[in-house]
Picture 1 (tube, rainbow, N blue to C red):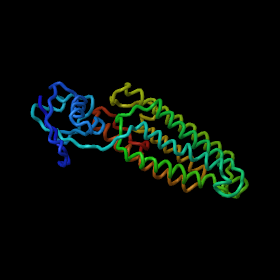
Picture 2 (picture 1 turned 135 degrees about the horizontal axis):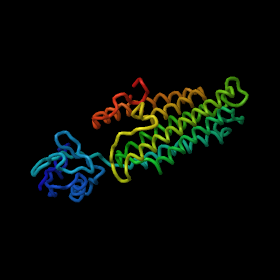
Picture 3 (picture 1 turned 30 degrees about the horizontal axis):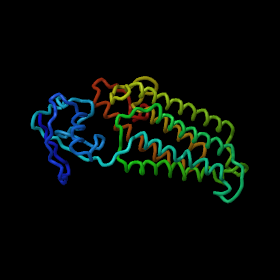
Picture 4 (picture 1 turned 90 degrees about the vertical axis):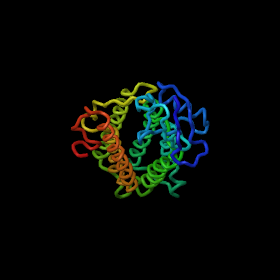
Length: 299
């Protein structure tokens, strides 16, 4: 059957474009056919919609009641980059930045001093957190969307490299928090309570990622209702445990930089959780009604 592809912008000389495709074709096949006609627009760069409904990969055109002669709206999403690559880049920043501030303190701060227990524990906490996230990116996560706009790599990297990298490292590892300085020491019970809660939150976060991974077979974009640890209370326990991780770092360090990163990160995760929660409720008619988005019993 013949399908007309119409550009959303109306400025491209390539459109409108009429293409031939089997009646039982999938959205993926339609994107591949368009790609052959206009090589600039590879499938990940295409957004196709009909009647304001975005066509999802893996579905048949007939699922959207697309017929001979119908017009499909095309939007150029711009140059794309894989989610996995973006994650690896943004998490690598703090992994590189924190050791520089921690081990080259005399060169950075202009004086020699001995790190306090708080600084040492905070350093290993933060390094463990970001190394864990790199490992999850490589071996655990299965992404519902393979790419994102290329510009996002700069925006996302700024969030991690600047806020949880340079800004956090500079203020946490400075001489004002050194051993022997008034106010730098923490009571032993607080140090090890923070370390214990941090470890529990990290393990919990990792386990929720395993649950999400197991819901989606390799190479698919299948969506199912998650159940089990944390998911019986909220739709996004991974965001909840991530927030607890940075709450503990903030309590331990008493650093305004840590509280700033916590505020920025938890706010963004809460917005993502609300969006995902609404999506679950809309997609699954049997979605548990007693679940909240991210904060148990509250929101």
